[in-house]
Image 1: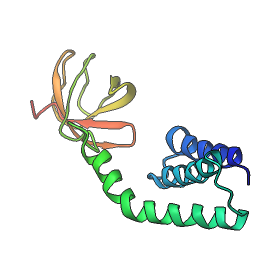
Image 2: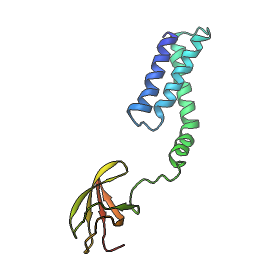
Image 3: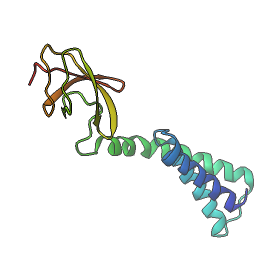
Image 4: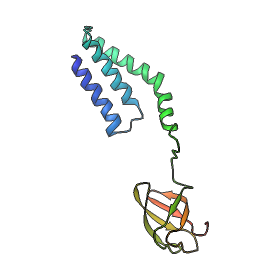
Length: 145
């Protein structure tokens, strides 16, 4: 393959990982390896096509097994304040919510269904703790605060 075809392949793989799908950093290393093979052609190194594919596969495997795990865990666990779920966070209720009643609230940039699992009415403006979530439904308890 020509050097520019490797660069296009690398760009497509990197773009797919970063913008389209979450492949957990596998496509990043494939894309970087394709770009590295393309750079060989840019600097004038002439390699037969079978050797280009061998270099691509070898670079991909080595970088994936060497760097992927530590880089992926560092990026995903290093985010300050990042929590997987919303359990335990607080939410301000904008409307009165009767026991067992449902309402809609905006939380973390999206609309959620709120269900009052308690036996007391939650008045508008009250700050409540989220007990648990199911999909886009948050369960709160008016008795807890």
